[in-house]
Amino acid sequence: MLHYFLRRAVAGIGVLVTVTVLVFGLFEMLDSDAAVVILSRRGAGDPSPEQLAALRAELGLDRPAPARFAEWVTGFLRGDLGESLISGRPVADVLLDRLANSAALAVLTIVLLIPVAVGLGLLAGARPGSRTDRVISVGALTMESIPSFVLGVLLVAVVALSLRLLPAISLVPTGTSVWDRPEVLVLPVICLLLGLSPHPARLVRAQTTTVMASEYIRTARLNGVGGIRLVLRHAAPNALSASVHPLAGSVVGLIGGIAVVETLFSYPGVSKELLTAISARDYPFVQSAAVLLAAFGIAVYLAADMVALLVSPRARASVEGDLR
Image (tube, rainbow, N blue to C red; front, side, top):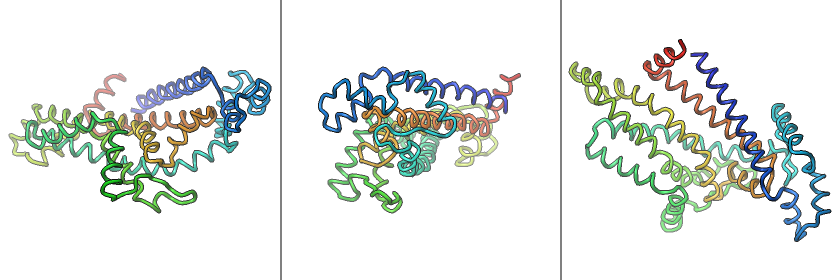
């Protein structure tokens, strides 16, 4: 088990290194940099080569790309994320300002996403072909077919503008916590749940249907086991062990989903700040945020691997057999 985890962790580090190099390389391929953006914002019109050269020297953008990359990597490994080229503030401070808001949105969504997806999948798969199964399957497929930003616009139009039940814009005043106005979280969380839960729910349903048709379930029924006990005690462990990674994929999908939702609802989170930094060519902020988000995704998948092994004896036996 330990050897398996270490092997997966080493692979994750390799992915993280690849992400780091790719983000830097893509930024180097852009046709402009932070110096151009800053001078344009100052109303300098078309900046002269002399102005660009002076500002690039001030920001350190005139140095060779490998030197800048090595400096960032060295600082990152020491816990120094560098300074924002646009605001001049430490990147860590900017991230911390927004991280609490994004974390609140992500944690609340995850807490609801997992039981909703698992519950609907088990409910539909326990009796395949039933009316409950058809309703859940059609609803999940319909929601999965609609882009998240379309769902968000519909929610704003109906719930916020027509019914006036919740705010259309999730603004959080500077210096206050999002929990001071919890109503601003409702529409973003609903939008994320509608976009992320259908796929894992359908996969849990498919796995549950397969397990319910297996020989050991038929044996359990012959021994008088039925109803909710049969589903939860005998079917759910094997069905969920095969569905852990799709659920992990939905949790990782929060990164992209939150970016859409934060932009749509003007929610002050990390993703919204990241999109602003990309348009401003703020390389230190984008590089640090991208690596940290990739590390989050890798950690989620590693945790999913461990949960799958803990839940399913069959998965443990398979891994132990591969390691021999």
